[in-house]
Image (cartoon, rainbow, N blue to C red):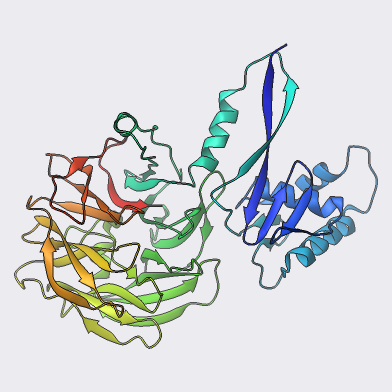
Length: 436
């Protein structure tokens, strides 16, 4: 009979590692003593990250049918022992969140690499496509591009050879929610995406959500009545900065990435409500916020007054003090698409030269996020640009542009003069680019 490989993953989260095949939990490589039932609960939670695991699900996992025990106390005891092993707490959870009258949810990010432990068993049938698809969700955390196209996320894996680059894997939806989603941004480790979601309803007000790569529901971070948009992860992944609409102004808010107390950092003059029209900005393209590599500064946009040119502004995360960095022509909408290179030494941005005509510029940055010299113009297309991002090696830029007649993704060198090359990817009308 033919054989197939039955895979059981090793989950990595924080300093912990769970081998679901051997039933061993390790911290910094050191095996922890944990009873079987808490281990089974942890395995169940890790198999469904970001999803609600009900007490009924746990009961079915731990005990066979026709078993008569005090399930409530037994489950409470298993959860308590699990939290003790992880150094977690129910009041301020980092790993296991309690959902009153519903169950539990694993909220910490999983490492993008999930090791597979295989055991061979005979099978009369070939492996199912569904199983292969499930493995692709984990692979997606390693290297991906996400963009918003008619409310659908795309993932694209660049390859090391030209043939593979010309034939990327198909687009796969990251979210499938009704309403409108925009401003996606990857967490530093690449396992989560924060974005703005305008749920359908009477108010249709966008708020900030976080979604784990793969299956599971998004977690809502904000409950604004005015509109939250343009999230940006801090370099350590612990915080998310975003903009909150406030009439002709916008507040820059910082919130823990797992939820918690908000902190208003600064207020900027910015026609925020105009930017919220289905996430699209016909004057200033996203991203609208960018962190410094050391987390001390935020780059944002600010207008001197409504309907005036947008300039790039540096804001101190510690004090909220502001300093204007760019001075585009006052006869244009100004600058946008803020993207700081992975090493923190270069800022790429899009400068609007007319109503919709934009081109890509780069400028060197000091350690304090101040421009060093004049900005260098990389493109001379005078075409609409709707998103800009660095590749992880810091050598190239990927941007959404109509330079070919319709909106497509393009890639070009950020270090030397070169012609942009079209990025072959499934999906139409790509914009709001983010790269893991």
